Length: 162
Image (cartoon, rainbow, N blue to C red; front, side):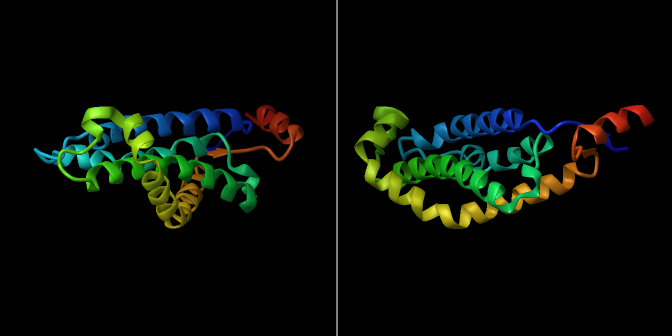
């Protein structure tokens, strides 16, 4: 059964922000690991779990199916995800012991900032395509259960028929 709701871009932004914060939290173990003993498998897998959380924010907004708006929001979200991936890779590629266990995530960023940003930009192109497609899948998935009104009259008529 479809339900009609207003677009809530603010809730989309808040939901996306929450997923990005969750992603940072899940990346923390890998970003501050010493290098030896190596990461546990669950800590390494956690780095790649948060993108699945981006299926939820599309419940609140579909960007009016405007591909330019979807590309733009996908690019900003991707930049945040790639930044955390850049911190993790910079910490893990260094010599053992890695700098992250001594200085934390902020230390990796301040001491190896050029490397972090280079890796962020390296991941950006494939990741923005991935997040754009993931957003499309999420919009399609949520459109099976919810509908956005074209204008206020459609919203009012949907409540009258219910």
